[in-house]
Image 1 (cartoon, helix red, strand yellow):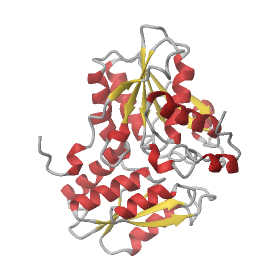
Image 2 (cartoon, helix red, strand yellow):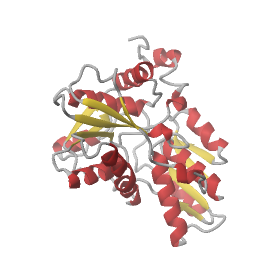
Image 3 (cartoon, one colour):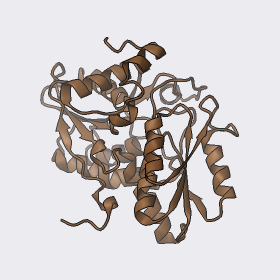
Length: 325
């Protein structure tokens, strides 16, 4: 098969049995390996869909600039899509995010603006507000707004969820995703629940995020700092709906990083810290399941973009994590 361009290779990622990682829990443990997308993460689905919609509607004109606020993976997906389609891009990222992501974005020809990581989402210097200001001040610029654009959950409804349903032939009992923009868990959760309301939708949230507290109590609390990248929020994205979420788990940085490293060493799958968060929640819920059931976890991205962080023993020790535990 000859593809029209690199963007048409996005999606249809493999669903893989996690045999050794899931050896001590009753159900079959399956991972949706999103690092197999061409730029290495689940976010390429969303970046492609929103950019193509903006081109189709005329909102993004030839020679225009795409701006996006992101923890990094969306930025990589945007930069790849812009390179393939002939647009410029400016990616706005908090300072705590890994340098590997910035290097990848720049390799695709994108520009990167770093912002403070220690401010709330509505602060003038937050990555969201900096991106909005750049969009306003740049002629021909359009912001994708992944936290607000409903194409985000819709593309997961139409692609990610359908792929999981078809690969399992509908024999899926639980699905686990991280809580970030909410696009994945909202879109996939809605699709699966429409086909079988008994399927359990599980959210994984880093300790320090406000979303699990909101889910449990109905009240929003102030967020705290944490090291895991790409998931967790201190506000409620408009792309997140709790309607189909059945349960959420908090997971610490330490457990997330240990689990991601374990995934690499037991399954040969190199993924990011958010995948470690998701797998911790997956194994926790799996202990309540039966041997004839199956649970699917999203494995979000390529761990190569964290080699300078939690895959680096010196970084772990510097941050107080025991790499040998």
